Length: 132
Image 1 (cartoon, helix red, strand yellow):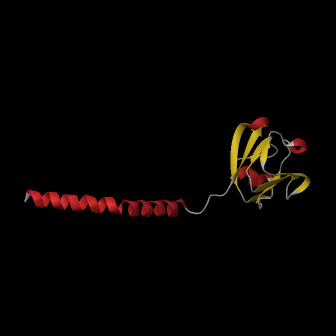
Image 2: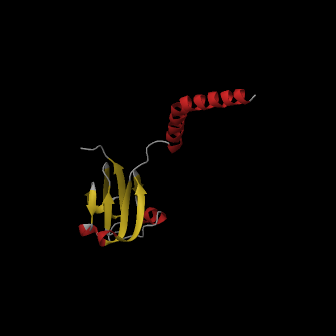
Image 3: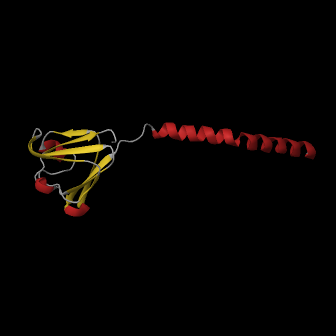
């Protein structure tokens, strides 16, 4: 009885050890499926220059034709002062609703100030672009 128990336990461990790579592959595939598609890039917006103050992150693509839409995502009208734009994203900002008035476009990089449109942004487009 004792030898047969040891034999069964030994066979069990050999089976488990030889199946370990298969279990790992199944686990990796399951985790990849649960993660879903690659996440969309996010732009970081700040209410003060030099990336200070309250932070708001918005995923690309997104359109905000007016100050009411910006307010819904936590950005008060005429409040943005700096932003960080990831690769593959373009942010166009406007000083009037419906993408009107003066505008600036920002691409990949850290923009410590928003130039002539600092504290003047009322509408905005966050777009995905192909890397150059």
